[in-house]
Amino acid sequence: MVKRKLAIYALLASIAGLMSLALTGCSGDDTAVADTVGSGDTAATSVISDSAQDAFSELLGDVDADLDQEQVEIERIQGVAYSDDEAGVLASSVDHERNLLQIKLQDLGGRRVSMKNGGSIRLREGLMAEIFVDPFPTHTLTAWVDLYLHDGNGNEFKDVKVQIDYDMYSMGHGPFFTIADKSPNGHYTFRLDYVMFGPWMQLLEVPDPELEDVQHDLEVVIVAVP
Image (cartoon, rainbow, N blue to C red; front, side, top):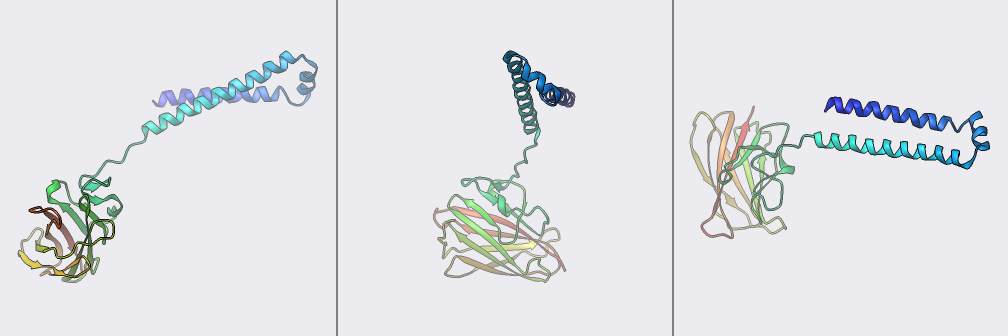
């Protein structure tokens, strides 16, 4: 591919040289000569110039096409929702810079996805969850988690019995259990009391507000750092 591009660039340079010569032939003293020759010669010069320009544009188009084909597509991240009918973290909510808040939908079987605080997760089409952690970054041993459930169109889901189990991710200081405090506007809040700093895994069990006997298990990893 590299050799082919070098050959193309060399050919482009040659064509550019021809164009320059063609233009030079119609300037200065040669202009007077061109004016005195017949119309056939003038037409011939015009044809050469147009052909060179066409070839130049055509080759440039080929080079651009080759470059486009060589662009590497961004790999789709498992657990991220890229369309309105996919479950997972919304692509706009993915945090590419730090890993202090990670999300995983257990029923997707995907890996954990680093998410921005306040980011959105699509549990299914028509059911959205937003996760807010306070304080964030979590620099204390007490954290508050706010789970906001809505349909994506401004309609909240109320009276859902959401519960949470949480434990330290690797050392097993638990598990601890609590039920969310419900509010009339679709927000479900938890108080989490940690015994030490480090990564903590919260399992949120969210019954589907519209589908009977369907539960969404949402793993939330919060890294508490002093």
